[in-house]
Length: 394
Ligand SMILES: [Zn+2]
Image (cartoon, protein in one colour):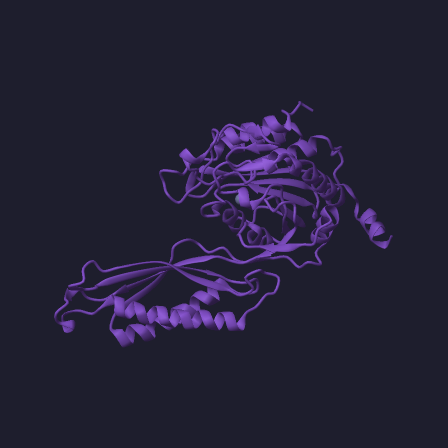
């Protein structure tokens, strides 16, 4: 097989290939460079590579690299994009991987280009010529903005395996659940007019006050009715994030907008929550004579949950010697679960360093992660079913 670059060289090349994804167009970049690097390295190791362009996004691609066939198997997944960066606040060039104090600094070093370099460096040292079940490396686009890469996989029913690991930075702790995220806007339209006579208009701020009061009652009900002790914040949350309305004290406010997020627990349906909120609004419209519209700022991310009895969770608990836990951030996990895979989140580096200036991956995270990857590949791709059964009996 052709030689792969060293782990550090692969990580450097991935970091040096900008792939910012952002809902603000002036930041948003193609991820093509990262996909091409991964494709060439994975092809050199015998993987069949499919580069999948995203519908309606000509500059964005997923990569599905497959070794072997079968109805079981393992997906090692990550995203190719990074968040934007604060130029003045980096001590070094964010696109130049730099080692200082046993840490590798660079944009995407821990979230999560470094993961791909670690996977490739692990795979190269393994004897994979007769895999019994497929090993699939999945690299997605736009996780940090719209998750459109993972959504496209679900829409096209693209990928099939029994188990999946997403290598997001969890400091090597296996993660089996996180909350969902919805970001919504409520727009109240009244009628502007001179403030001296209330009957000359219809005040949108007054109506928004009623909307917020009702939402706060709804929030209280959610908190009373849903609990999950596996989360630090063990109830669903709703945060009013910003409000804009009106322009002058002597004008009746004609229009007001509120934006909020809602983070549901596993087992709760985002769609059902939206429907419940939508039901509250007509009553207020009727009472106030305004028009009230509810819309989503972004497509929602469903909550993520894989039963802790799942083989992959048990295997990762054994390999890391840590109990599976939950996190406060969202991932592509629920989309991979929708594709029928038992998915867990486990990766090198800490989320505390992600989305920050001077992002780094600590060097001491690399070897333990390689042991996890090797252990999972051995168990889910190299063993025959008989061997697995025997092991379970033993
Ligand atoms: Zn990430």
